[in-house]
Length: 178
Image 1 (cartoon, rainbow, N blue to C red):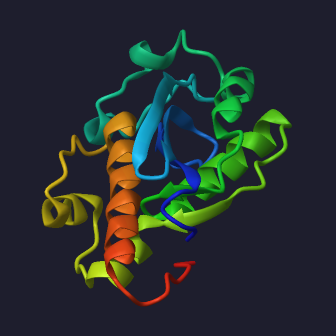
Image 2: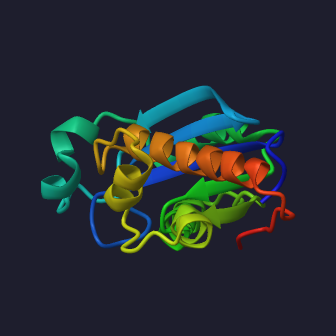
């Protein structure tokens, strides 16, 4: 991780089915230093009209059928990542895989940003276990509407901000988490 003055973006995807290319929602929260400066969220029409995870995130085909496809939407969302040093996500391999699969399916280049995982950050910074997003949010007293892309991305942003504050108050050198 970089200093408390760097710019990063927290990102969260919700998926419609078991395919990693089935993003049906995305949220990006941009942070400059210790302050959230922008939040964007979008519904995405997944490649198949089959939403099997409605019981998790509440989205149905009716919610997303008229939304733009990932390939049409991503260039707009990607502009939000200009100038960020890294992307943060809770269980980052999941979101990185969704982003990679959606970009590949749409024939778009994958962003070159590295990912920082807030699961790893919480474990290393505060020794939080278990480390599911609701657990970390409870530990840090952060609001959360779990599996709402905007709420999850905002929580991830706030976890990194809290870790930056903890590192700033610790006389030891800041270590990169990944």
